Image (cartoon, rainbow, N blue to C red; front, side, top):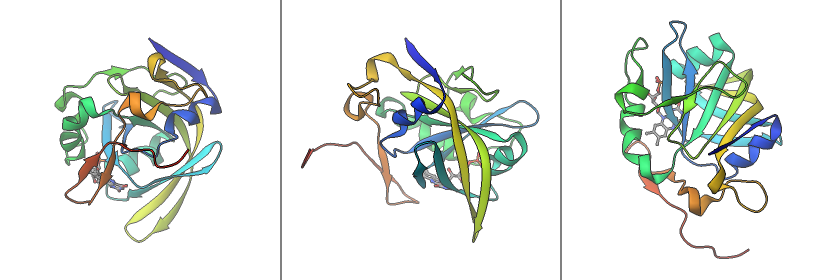
Length: 182
Ligand SMILES: Cc1cc2nc3c(=O)[nH]c(=O)nc-3n(C[C@H](O)[C@H](O)[C@H](O)COP(=O)(O)O)c2cc1C
């Protein structure tokens, strides 16, 4: 069962800054999926991500004006390598990885059904920095698997088994393990 919401309530599903899968729509209708770690919260409704300007994700964000941040759990970590590959834009990494699409809550861009949560954004503006652009988006909705909600209505990082990438470009994916305070 998914809990679907419209508006900024979905920001709580990203409260971990995990390794993300970003889905975007190519003009052909093919759904592109890329792996991104350089994510930050900017306000209660906005995020920024450093996205390489040669990526399909960048071109699709600019053309379609929207993107979805999908939060994978460790159960699908092995698909990340396939999603991070440079696959031609007329083929979908989602199919190559054996994953399933789920219709958007508020956007045309689908999300990945096997993820723990997905949060939908309208692309707002771009700040170029070197080969990347800092891509800023405003939340419009999203969903989470009902059983992964914590008492505050945010994602339960332990139940969702979200992971973080370290040591790029040969990443180690690490699960949150030990609470030292709080
Ligand atoms: C763990 C991991 C984290 C990554 N983080 C970023 C990132 O923050 N920004 C970026 O531009 N590329 C990042 N990449 C590289 C992209 O995933 C890669 O360029 C991919 O080909 C982009 O897909 P696309 O061309 O389909 O958009 C990361 C790759 C991995 C494996």
